[in-house]
Every structure is written in structure tokens, then in C-alpha cells.
Image (cartoon, rainbow, N blue to C red; front, side, top):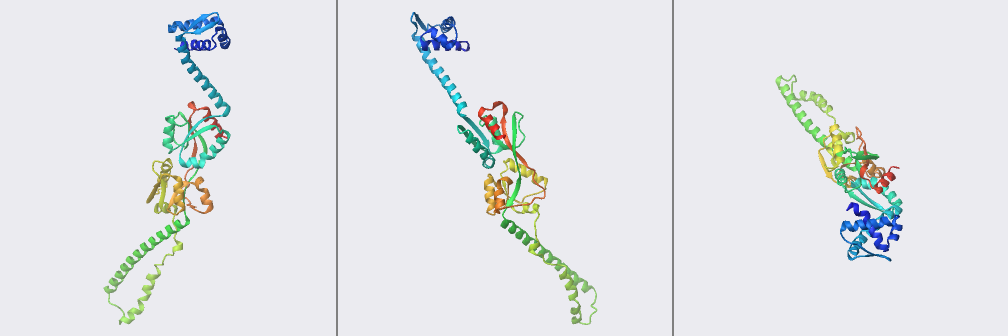
Length: 358
């Protein structure tokens, strides 16, 4: 069939014009070349396609059947060419992006807003999924480009850094104050318990030692007169602890609070777990949430301490809705960027990459 495609084109032009010389002018070839091509096509199909006369050529029934099929095919090709030309003229195209919900809201949207303003005819579709699913969609060819936090990738994919983000822990001042009061109360109860035990031990020891020897005092009154000196010494060695003097370290806050984290399948959670391991932090109570916006919302209503991206919660910190927990050791920053296959980029995707690189 491939060797006959040129013959079909020549046949189509001759059939449209009904004249070999006109077809030759349209195709910019000689009349003998047109006639020869028609003859070869008739031989290949084993059918006569034209009847020839002095006025020109006329399609046979078989030639008319072939022409109708070719007409549909060539008109479709012409329409496709016109569409592509229109796409180039108007900047039309399709852009399929894979991204997590939080990265879409806080990083991608500003870029998209400017890109669409300059390219209003581009059809944009967004697939919101965790990083690992975004990578799988790219492998399957279901998206053109993904926005992710940097992670080990197959060599066929290119990672284009966009910006850095920083993880942090936030809560309300009220929650932190209540946490300190709760832990202070626990310390008091433990101290009182230890004090009671110690006093009992000392009393028993005092009685025992007193009974070992006879009293040097002549009567009970003389003895009682001297005992307060010892009692006063016991009381002096056990001062009470003031509430305002109690504070918690970062490690204690993270281990004793209601710690709110993204679910375990999220790459951000995996990153934070490594930080906990390196800092020997062992959270006692963890509330898993699959959306960073909810983490922020829960933190603002005092549900606990949330691990969030500082850049995403900066307005809440500035307004005083939440406070940032100071860290003994900063969490290493992460890099957000676009991932794509350089060998299968559409013109629209290339244009988007160029747009975001400025």
C-alpha cells in the first residue's frame, strides 16, 4: 500500500478536476508522469478507473467507489493540517499536569495563572495525587509533566528545580500553654509521690535510730523541745516547684503533644520520620491526616502540633493564629520541581517549561 500512496494522490487530483493536464499543474508534475501513475494504479488494483476521451477523463463505477473513499481520507488529512495550523496560530494545545493538592494550591497555581493569561487557548487538566502516583502517571503517559518534591528518579526523567520549601511544626499558644500545665501537673504529682515516700522512709529511720539508744532527756517535754530542729531541716530540703518555672524542650513537646502528620504513604511523612530518627524523637500520640490544608486548619483550632511546610503557613504565623515551635536542629530543606520525559514533550509542554523557567 505504501508504494501506492503517491498514486492515490495523483488519482484523487485527476478525479477532482476530470482532466489530466489540470491535475499535472496542481501536482507540479508532467502530464506523462500523471498518465503513467494512473496506469500503474489500475494495474495494481486490477480495475479500470477512468474512461478516456478527447474532453478528458471520466470515472468508471470502480473509479467512483475508490474516489469516494479517498475523498473522505484526503479531506480528513486536510482538516487535520488546518487544525494544526490553527493551533500554531492561536497557541492552542493541551497540558496535563500531575501534582499533589498542597503543591498545586501553594506553588503551581500562580504559574498556571500567568501561563493561561498568555496562552488562553491551551486546555489544562490537573491530576491531584501524591508524589509516587504522579510519577506512575508520567510513566504511563497519562500526564505530560509533574510537580513533585525531589526524590530518586529513573534516568529517563529530568527534574527541573523550581524552589525550596522548609518543614516546621506549628500550634496555638493556648495549646502549648495547656500542654506545659499538663506536664507541670504530672511533675508535681510525681514529686509529691516521691516526697511522701521519702518522708515515710525518713520517719521510719528516725524512729528506728531513736529506739536504738535510751533518750538522754529526762522527760518527754525536754525531748520535744529539741525535735523541731530536725523537722525544720527536713522541710527546708524540699521546696515546692512553681508553675511559671516549668518549660518543655522541643523533643518533649513533639513526644508529649498530639502530633498531627500526613499519612505514612506521603513522601513528606517519610522525610519527617527520618528527621525524628536522626534526632532520637519518639512521638507518643500521632494523628494522621491526608491533606496539609487540614493539618493547618486543625493546628489553628488547637487540636495539637502539626508538621507543615513553613511557606504554606507563613500568613497564619504572621497573623498570630499559630506559633512556630523552635527546633534544636533545623529540618533540612526540600526542593520542589517539575519532572518530565525530555524525549516525549509536546510543543505545549515545552512552552510551559520555558515559561516557568523565567
